[in-house]
Image (cartoon, rainbow, N blue to C red):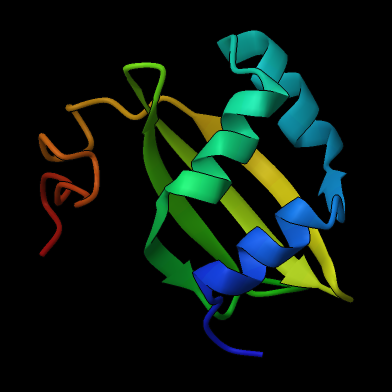
Length: 109
């Protein structure tokens, strides 16, 4: 399949073809992120990283500012279904001020 297109994500989101992984459900509760905030991120955000080699389906990282807070959602598409893998609030320790560019880790080039 290769890279994920934002239009495809939004189509599946609006078609209500979303599968919430157990991992995502636990993380959303722990992090105080609502399912509606995840959907708003998917519908209004942009893809900032692609992971075409992820298994079993390629995945991507989406960023949006929802309710005045930055959110990242990792999701994948397979079998005409959108899989929500996790969601979190990024920190400036790991991301630039726009939360769209990952900072390089110390010791890595």
